[in-house]
Length: 119
Image 1 (tube, one colour):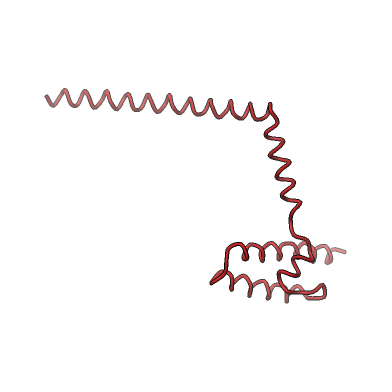
Image 2: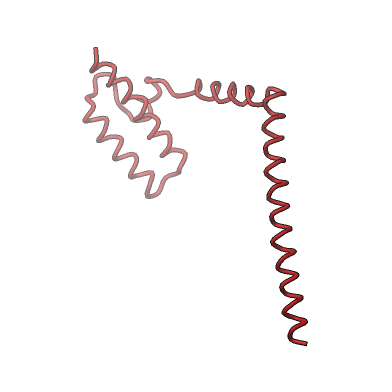
């Protein structure tokens, strides 16, 4: 009786291993086919265009200054102090959305100040 259960468990284990291999290959082939279909129908190009459109909605320097509460004449050190204060306040009791706006504002102004420094 014990040998029967051992043989049955081996057979079940073999079915599981074979079945998972077959399913794995099927999923891989389906993924490859989906990628091929997407490139044929232009879905990949549409996704790229959507990404470009979203990047175009980035904040500008004026919005970044409003978010951080600084002016055009504010030094970079003061901007960093404002950023640190706002970031910490939103990390403790604020929202993730506001915190991300503060980060994006700092990144935007960082680009502006770097280009000014290179001129």
